[in-house]
Image 1 (cartoon, rainbow, N blue to C red):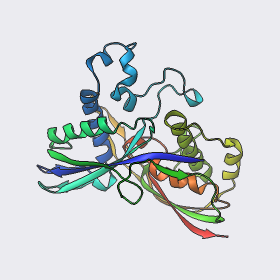
Image 2: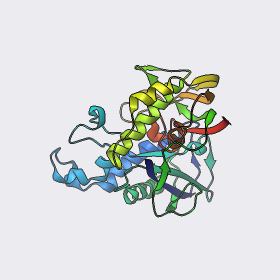
Image 3: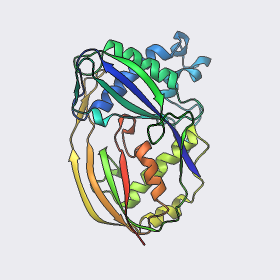
Image 4: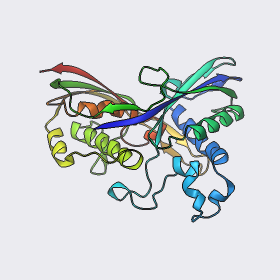
Length: 301
């Protein structure tokens, strides 16, 4: 069993100073992308009526507002978007005229990842300007890359099968602000069972909606085994960030915890899922880069 996705890297060159506020690069890109995508990706008839037969092929609807004609996994009507941005390295940075910058998009719709629409949208955004001050830039290249940043024509495929190594302790680094809930309540110190459940469910949903199908695993049994994993070390800090909606004028939190946690137990079967979550994200608001994790093996037995 595996999980597959495309990794798209967009390269720009600043024509004017381009600035990304701390903690908000992903959100700026996500909001601007939605506006630009509506302009370049849909024919006029697509939004004329909810019953328009062209609506199913409209890239805006498919990428930015995916809604099911039928209920999805667990009754989902509003589907998770089939992409996430990786732009945290741009947070708090300023690029002067002539300087290059880039960011990645991970694309989960294996049948139609939307590369043409995404590239066209960001080409328009670059010319119009992005970020505070609307600094203009130029999209100079868009390329599919693999895990080593080499050119790739095929999707990246990650195995979800248990490895041969008996892993007894891992370190999970929450790279970008992460929000995880258990029984509807946010967790400040995420148990392994909660982390694994959110990771597992997201991977299964993305596979079900955009890939070969949901995970063929015993969800309950794996969840019970995840409860046996302990958390001997937790060093997390809450990062407070807010965004203001251009439509409503209201402020919305973008924060979450960042830092490191160590988990101890029989972890071999869970490790492939955690490594896949580096690319999918886990928790809330993953589409603009929240919930990115990195996992490292600390001990084996």
